[in-house]
Image (cartoon, rainbow, N blue to C red; front, side):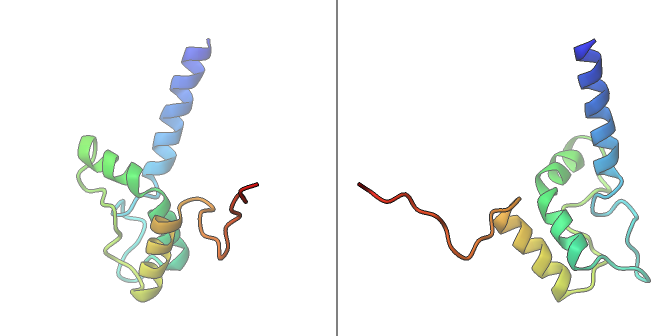
Length: 96
């Protein structure tokens, strides 16, 4: 039963991620992807890459229909920082 639940969960996660992948048709010339979509696409870029390699070649890492600088800023901020990785200061362990 646990194995079946795990497989079902993975399938549901893949379908949910596919619906908001870059190049999936959610953005258009009239409704381009903005800053927050850039952040999302940056976070899921590794999954987008794997998805495009093995399943659907229309899925891209980067949305071509975007608002320009703001999308780029969000995308690169997410790529460089990851989930919660952006911080102005880091707590370093002090040697005692």
